[in-house]
Image (cartoon, rainbow, N blue to C red; front, top):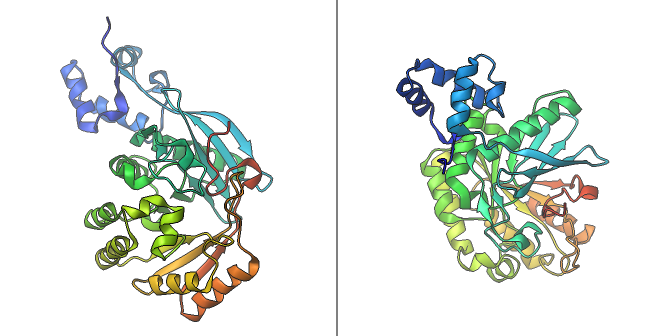
Length: 346
């Protein structure tokens, strides 16, 4: 029985250098391979044309590159692109390219399915099958950058971790992926162009602050009233608003960076005056801004977009209290690529 080949992208640059020295070659060969794997995003050893055939064969004998493949691609009327991404073990996740006139944003997944149980989100119904590895997250960004250049004539400008999964439940791999994305040896993107969105895992938010991460933080809040939030996001019973608030205060104290609250207003769920007042109070704890997000139905009708009047009530009350508020219209609804709709229907 042949030994299982190791995934080469699990190795550090130092481990690659050691491998070549142990096999009678020069250490710098490891640097070359590392550059091919990350900066040039090679998907096969044969692509590594600066290496001899014998070296490429030796790599092929010992390692695999567990790269992703874009299984299907759908283009929306508004230019949004949704990718069904096939992983090396046959599982599928989805990622989205969201274009505007001035930039393109990659919305990437961090888990197959999701660890949490938000009732309004299609992904949550899949349950978590596994975490994505750092290279699988990285590959999604590489694929979307190529699509951005091909269809919009410029490189990818922003990344949001708002696809499938709860990023903070896969913290180590998300951090490794971001390190590669921001490294000059990887994609060289600025950390300030990356936003990690969480439903709120207090312990990990504090860890991020301690780790001095440089990316932005967004929180899917949707209600600042305990029982309302628990009714739509049951995990809130484990991570209550008080703990979330304390973690966010700690985040701001350490990083001095604003938090974005993502907030969907639903008819009959969080569209009352007391819901608005609770959000205004929650926003006073630390500097923040609020994105009111258009809701995208997921078939069963339990959740319905609130009226324009309710949305306008939120806007006027937030602005009256000097809280920055934006209304985010969803993109890619016609291909189920909008917020909360990623569920592998393909």
